[in-house]
Image 1: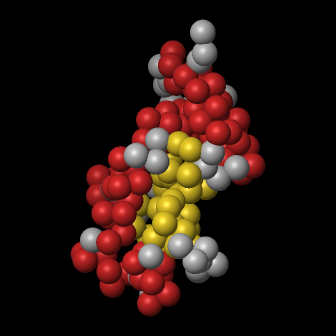
Image 2 (image 1 turned 120 degrees about the vertical axis):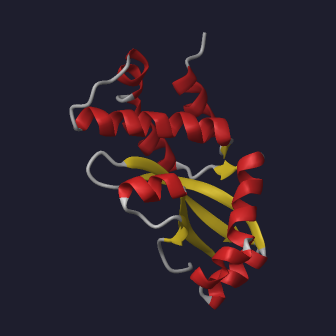
Length: 156
């Protein structure tokens, strides 16, 4: 029987991840963060924490495409008029011609005991791209971060 972690690794290797994969990987990243701060870990978290490094390595080797509802929600967030002023003209051009997203890595947001936030690459049809993360308002409120989409690197 295949473990959940192996299913996530297989999805990364196949080059396509869904919301379920991102959630599972994020749980492993959060468990590792909690372990490093000496927090209590449930049995599931104890098993998940060591897998975080495996996921990081796999994501670094192959940035998988994002599929399904996660792709659709990413489009909705980036195209929401509320956030338009956060983007440069070049980033807005990429958003308007967006082809797909790739899952790049997870960053820890907030100190101490931060939370893992997925970092995505938004890729236009012409190949231009930028990295971004979308921080929930709840996490921003409790961790002192900025909520909503945030570009992390200039366009490629």
